[in-house]
Image (cartoon, rainbow, N blue to C red; front, side):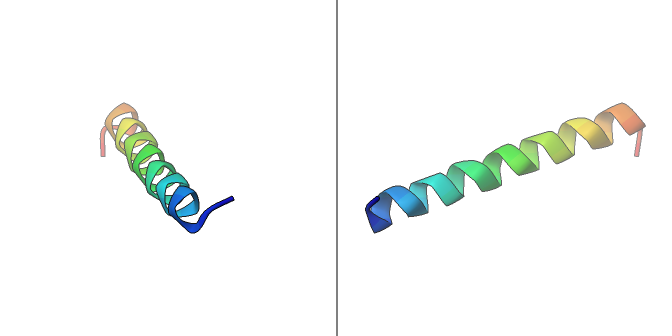
Length: 30
C-alpha cells in the first residue's frame, strides 16, 4: 500500500467517523 493511499484512507475514515458522530448527536438530541 502506498503512503498516498494510506493518507487517503485515514482521511475517509476521519470523515466517516465525524459523520457518524454527527448522526448520533442528532439522534440523542444533544
